[in-house]
Length: 131
Figure 1 (spheres, rainbow, N blue to C red):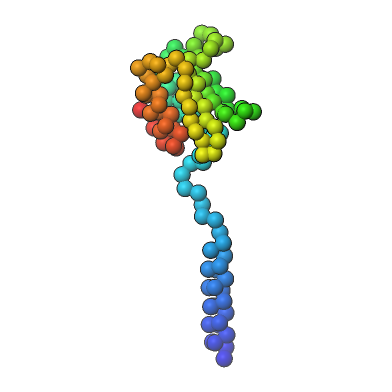
Figure 2 (figure 1 turned 90 degrees about the vertical axis):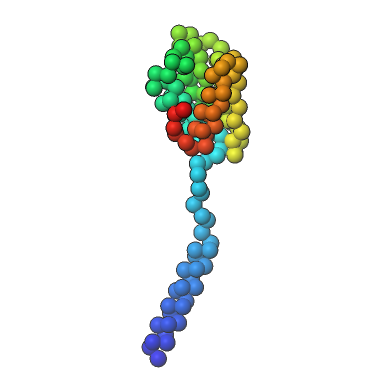
């Protein structure tokens, strides 16, 4: 009779394992799409690809991240390098979960606007590559 008890015990363990597996939440795939993590990815990408790389299209500007926003809209600003207190030339912000991105300011009327849009969209989705 002992082998029968072992078979029953194994069947019970298998059933319990299946129930536990069914109750677990699958691990999320892809990056967190909430506003703050999205803007953190964008800020890291902008810093690495536009500024630390020495990209001439952004040489006259300085990155001013404002990720700790009480308004629920974390953002990054691009300002003139020599006058960081001046009005931003580019604002990229996100809101909500999943986040809705916006980019606006005078730079979005310049030829570099298409590149800004492509870079921000790529970084917000989790791709760290520079253009």
